Length: 152
Image (tube, rainbow, N blue to C red; front, side, top):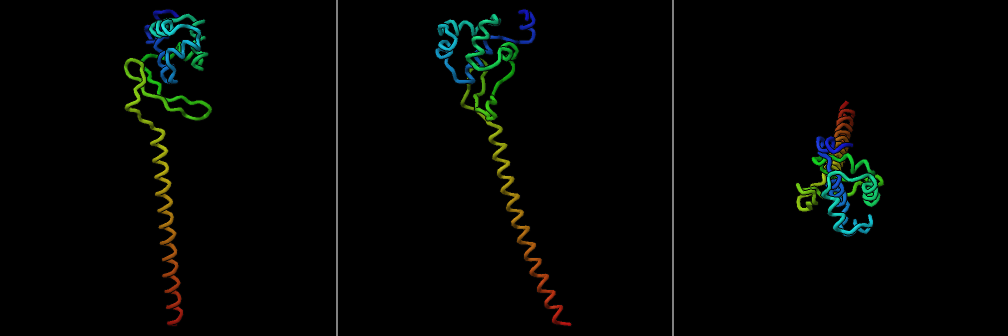
């Protein structure tokens, strides 16, 4: 991919590495150890727009993501959740600088699950009330049948 194409679609390899590293809560120092660079070199790569494939492969391996994810992730996209082993790991929201902002995190899946549980509880209560109503109506019907049977 040429540099002009990367600029047109707002792809910045270094920013993508930083975003993914922050999402996985890996410090630059820890990342440096994983890719066998100094922390300063990792910092320099994180500010580089286009990084050669061999270096991207090292970062991708350390981040446990496909190389294509680093190559194709656009700058305007926010990453909030990772799906790993059929579970969802919570991630922070990224601010304008690509840093994690843990102060104002909203987890929509937790809210959905909470609402589903509330809905289930409401349906169970409604079902219990309907059963109670049916039993009362059956009792009234039996009483009327007994009275009408005695009166004849």
